[in-house]
Length: 206
Image 1 (cartoon, rainbow, N blue to C red):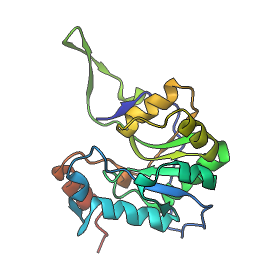
Image 2 (image 1 turned 180 degrees about the horizontal axis):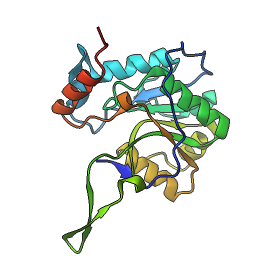
Image 3 (image 1 turned 120 degrees about the vertical axis):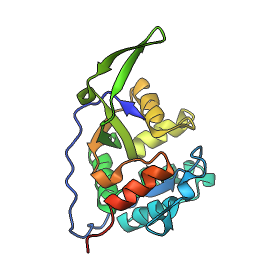
Image 4 (image 1 turned 90 degrees about the vertical axis):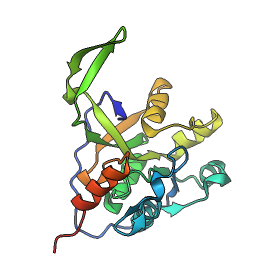
């Protein structure tokens, strides 16, 4: 599980209202290093296709990751990194994260509460239970506003890693990071069994 000590996450309430038009933003669906799971099916579509649909509905223009981030820097647009292992992240939430990044100038990251029991390990031995209130689970998206994206590209970019590791990397280099509470449907899946649970949880009511 990818966890971080939190700052106070900004509350988010999903809305059924249409997503207002978004300022131009570029996005990448990050499937590198995630094995075959992004191609599992949820509601009849692959996770990666579902994540791409959500980004498109949010008004984010997806670009080919092989083009490099310099293209987005030249456009002076925010870059949205969206994880296909969070396939049911609502378009409205993605758009809200982009707006927050533009408004604050901070890196914006979606997070969920930690529900699993977490133990300390000291000297190879299992120790005390960690207070779950002191942790968050990183989900999606990770949004880089234009100025910080340009700085990051100039410094060599992000390491190829999971979002939690990338957030830690950014914090270590004094990038401002804003954690935003994501809706329940935005949870991260780590197995085919998780996908089945998420599909059941997000199946439309009849």
